Length: 566
Image 1 (tube, helix red, strand yellow):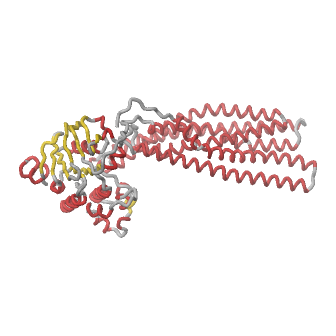
Image 2: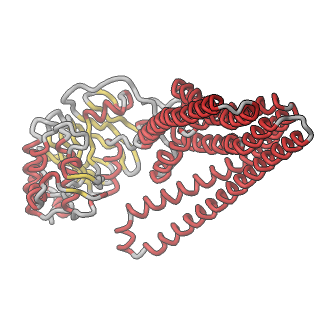
Image 3: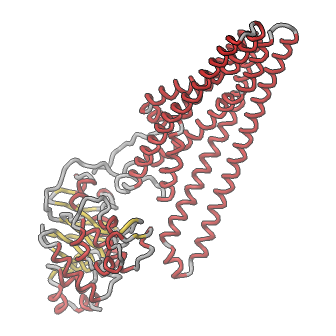
């Protein structure tokens, strides 16, 4: 994983081009169908005008029947083309939004490979609202083209009746779009700011939810809520601004469209009064003046949606184009590897050096909690290799030369505060549903009492963040998930701090038994886990100061005895 010199930045316009390019087939089909819909809609008032004119000349039942048949064909075409055209476009829109959501979420889950400088709440907003609004460009373009088709057909039909009517539609449409395109730029900038403020408010909520219990513990919840209220108020004010701008835009578009329709109607009336057009052409002109307001409305709203889609695409680019912290290597560690930390310096760690042989069970007694956390972060790849001195090797291969995915296939670091997801006990232990050894992991982590307590057993419903479980149950559930992964190298950090001494003793024995023949490192101050280990390393003031079995250290090292005995 080498640090690159340059990173090509993906712009919002590039994201939009990508979305358009890979949905080109669906957009062509949707454009044809929606164009047919708009053409049939436009043909309706034209057909009415022709029917009126021919009926006045020939009042026979045959002409009436032909007219009714023609209208039926037009109405059927309108119905079917709209139904299937929107089905094609909405399917492509939904699929494209899903692709971007998955891509943004995937980047958000790669803190090692990417540095987006965005909090999880902001990434969540980008992966949902912004992904959806970016994908809307797939519907916007075909609707824009089909609306243009309707306007052109109306202009041609009116122009055939009288050139002045056709020119009035073309010139009026150009003037309306010129005015609205200027206004849409304000919408784009306002929308970007609104999305940023809403995302910050979402990030603040996520932080509050995570830290709610500690905040209650020292009485900081009121100050935190006040901070959120300030951020939320800013988002609300900006939303009001965006709504005001959108309202002015919509009102202006409606007014201009109405003025154009009225101008066409009045001009057609004047021409009919002057004998320049006949009654059928007057009926057609009045009908088209009323109809043209809908495609004109769609046509005039398109610039707004384009600006919103571009603003959302640019926010997605913040995540997708974040400069990489490291570039993954291409090697792979061997199966059943050992773990070696060689002269690592990071934070409070000062030339930490140790080796855990393949199949060995080693415990580290860290006297300072910060040093334990920093060591776990280095091993978990939360700290990129170029951010610390020294090296960490897996199976003799430096982590800097291995891709993150390959490292995590062989090395799992279970965090101190393992996240619990909404679902069931089973889906939390085996999230991917790969049939891992769930039962053995449940037994080893002493989660059996939780499973037996509920009628649904492993299918017992777990709320988000394990809200319906106790602290000890959440910790054992997290441990069971780590054990079920059955990885070559497992690193546990304080896996039993929330359980009682008897349960802790049983967990220590079970983990040692289950992990026999697998490389295991436990960072802990638990006497039970220290005693179950093959050997214990003492981490004090950032260096390894002692190494022996737990019982030998108890007998020979007074400081160790005071640090780990309870």
